[in-house]
Length: 191
Image (cartoon, rainbow, N blue to C red):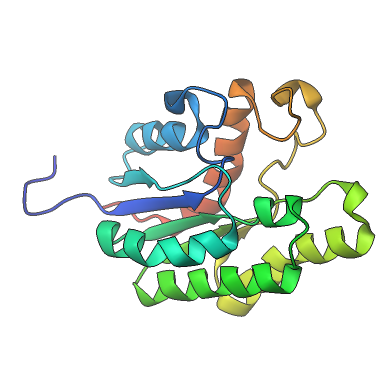
């Protein structure tokens, strides 16, 4: 048990609707399931979900400094970019914004897990390839952990998505957690 003077370090999940439990009960979302898993496996971390549906990397750049100051996270799970892609925004601009957020988090002393996503093929191969590659490139450049594709292993299974075919349903949340956990666990220390 933590005393009043010593709180568990925070994991800040900073994302969009894919982390904000869009369309399902918050307690059933992968971020809430992460909190349960940490307790079950005896990792003494608190999870702060600062994800907002519709968030873009530009919005995230403006919002992250306050979140870092408020929560002083040990780890930041950075899950942004999907809305940039769905709006057809510039990949170089998205990369610049993500790089700025990685730098902010690292400067604040946090380890970073960058979470990647892919775009549908109708955006054309040039855009979709550049978009997908950007997450790995940023992780290498900034020496961060990376989960190349949040929907790895189930992204093509329509039955695991809400009718909008964009947002994973409740059944898929455990799969999201497994994907994130594999990349996140090496960043955690037992406190």
